[in-house]
Image 1: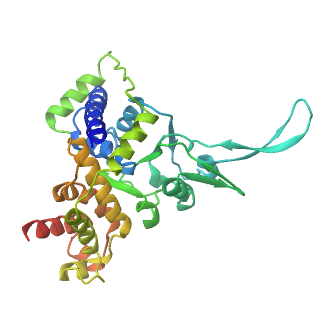
Image 2: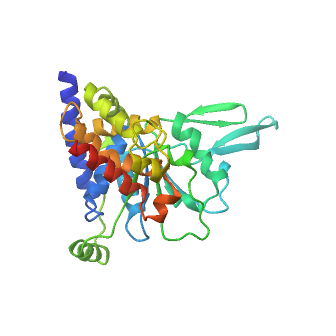
Image 3: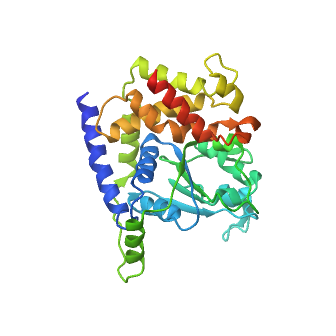
Length: 329
């Protein structure tokens, strides 16, 4: 227990330092930054959606700079191939012997933090190149499998307003992302500060605070946090209530939802709640911690029906109603 307390205290100090560094270049967006840091220490992947110019890419690259980790940025385009992400075998010759052979040239996915910029601009065939890496932390090429270094986090961005030339992420790909985060416009005061900071001559330098070894230790400490039975059951019940064919589902869910969230959602609700509790300096998550991460864990795992679309109901509203109903019970 003493070691857990020490780890949680170390995490609290580390998060303050990381936020301080990110704040040098990112104005506002505190909630989004909190979500991204929660995913980082819960060892989960993140998909951030927002219109152009809201510093999605800058936020992720700034976080990478504040960590002593390897970082790769992959700009997703329609002509991007799977081998451009994972790597491929190339023919090389030995200058001494003159013999030729194939050697595997690792792609940009072999890094700790991957920025998948505008991930929905590339076809599903290329998007699927990340599936194995995101789920198993491995890459297979030919008959060989390579283990990716830990920590391994994919942070992807996408633009919601341009539909031409984009490819919606398949459900299997979406399910690999722990959080689906929407980033909104800044307030008037924040936008004034952004303009002031970005139109001057000063260039802010970000310092690195955490290395891979410490991040892995903190991630493992979070996973070891105890969870009470009622919190675990609450997370599972909440997930099951999103499924229209479940006995736990409300009549509205049966009408509005075609497919609900799978077991991975329950896992991420608990892992996310553990990380939220740890970042707040607590040694065990509560139901409130589960409710805090539920909107960004569940909304991209719910496929709404035609009836819901006709009534103007989206997955975020469905999650909100589920949480409100459960909270009042």
